[in-house]
Amino acid sequence: MRVSNSLKIRSGVPLDIRNRIEEALFEDKLGEGTLENIRLFVNLIKTHYRHLELSYFTRLQDGCYPLLKQYDYHQKSAISVGVGNNILLDLALCELGCGVAQFDHTVPGPGSDILNKHNIVFNRIGLSRECTEDKYCLAEIVSRTKQTFEGWPLAVVKIDCEGCEWYAFSDEGILAVSQVDQLIVEFHFLNKFVDSSFALNAIEVLGKITNYFDIAYISANNFGGSSHVSGLGAWPFTIEMMFVNKKVSGHHVMSPNNHLQHLSNWKLGRRIDIEYMKPAFKE
Image 1 (cartoon, one colour):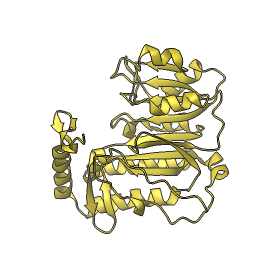
Image 2: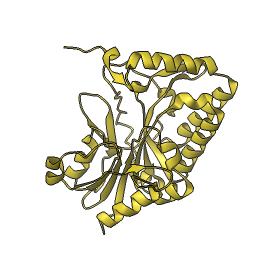
Image 3: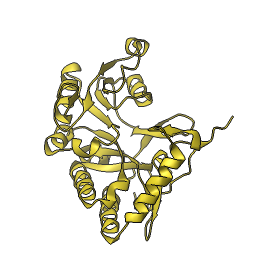
C-alpha cells in the first residue's frame, strides 16, 4: 500500500504542511541580497565539482551514500556522525574492510547484534562547536577515532547531525579532516539563507571545505522542501554532498563513457532538480 507523503511526521507536524510553511516563509523574505548569496554558494559548487567514479549504496532508490569506487577500504577507519535509524553506509564500510566509529547522543546505539557482527564502535556522543559532557568538537571526534582504530588511516567521515554541521567546521575542525580522503555531509536549513549572517557563514564553511576537497556528488534531499529561485531553479532546503580530497581526486576521474547517477531521497516526495548546480560534463 502506498502511504501519502503528507502522513510523514517531523517535529509533530505532517511533512507536507511543514514544508509548505517553510517554503512560504522563505519566499516572503526572499530578496536580492539572498539571491546574491545563493549565487555565490552555487558558484562555489560549480567551480569545485568533478565527475569521479563512485559506488552508490541505496535502498529502493531512496537516497544514497556515494563512495569512491576504485579505493582500498581494507584496514581503514571511518567516522559516522549522526546514526539515527540508518546505518546503511556504516555496514557497507564494514563489509569493505573499514572500522567505523559512530557518534550520536540522541540514540542508545545500533543494537548489540550489529556491534557484535561488525567492526563498529558506538559512542553516545554528539557533535558540537566545543567539547561538553555529551558532545565533542570535530577535532576531538577525529582524535578519539584514531585512538580507537590505532594504525588504521582515517578514510571516510560522514556528518548528518541536523544542523550542527554549520558550526562544526571551525578552523580547527576543517584542519582535523583535511587529510581525510572522503567527506560526506548533509547540509540542513538552507531556507535560512534569507538571514545574511547564516548565508555568509554557509558560504565560508563551503569555502573552507573546498580549499581541501573537490565536490564529487550533490543531491537535494526532498524531505526538507524547496523553493524556486529566479534565474537558477529549485533551491533545496537540505542538500547532501560528497567531497573527495584534492590530493586523491585526480586518480578517480570518471570515464566519458560513464553516466551520472540520478538518485533521489524519499521516494514518496517530489523530485527536486538541481542539475544547474553541476558544470557540463567535460572530463
